[in-house]
Image 1: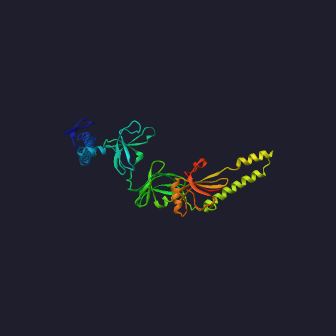
Image 2 (image 1 turned 90 degrees about the vertical axis):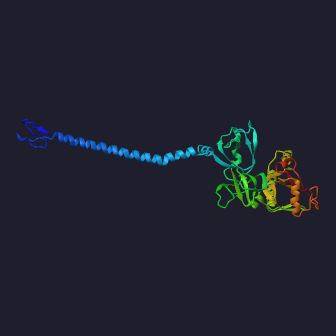
Image 3 (image 1 turned 90 degrees about the horizontal axis):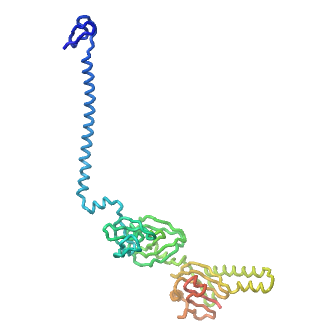
Length: 368
């Protein structure tokens, strides 16, 4: 091929740099265009090669991982696939014998059966209606169980039932999630916290139910059982003189001091007439002074005491027969009628009456 000189029009060889006729410099336009086209074609080739490599890597990842997972999902049994697609399904254990109901509600549902304590169930949590609280809808379709009866920790075997006995903590007390040595601490209760005692375990724990519905365990069951009625107290009592000693005696001395101060205030007060004074005295004379005092005594619950005009009383939460039994075991001679024998004053144990009934079921009274 040849190229034309732009100056004289003569032809020269294609690879010539100068015109063979006039000597002017020639411009290799065709060669430049070819060089540019080659560079452009090179860039397109690199882009295509990079894209092809990325597609190959993506295809390899899909084949190695995604396809394999899809195959496993397709081969999963129906029950397993159902559990995998239901992440809310949870495992619970019955903390007490619980009703299986047809609907997540107490009113308007039918009892389908009983779920024994310790039974394991799987289901999803459903909201309750009104005061019913939450419910567990069983995965096997056998009904609903109230969440208040369930726990996610399997309960131990109870060796003795405490019949849901209420107890007010008499100091700081730890509540554990289980009876195991590595158990988590779920709460630390203050004095005065109300608990429900469920029963005792073989390893000397007490299963309790907290006010918010949670279940837990208290260590050292024997110590707590001895304090069910309150802090332990010794009752020193002489039925011959109606004298009490120890803490009880101190409480009666305190009440006596308050009553004397009241009488002294009346005596020092100016009255308009003697009849007004007598009327004021009559309003105080013969009145009983009651106080609540929660203590435990040999398995009894001492709930209060009272100072009357010429006698004193202790009040207990148990029936008279139980109180008599305990005092007889302490060496007191008590007749079948509840009277302490061999005394000149009245001393006896009987069911409470009148104002005293608000302080306990049984009264130990002594006086004129």
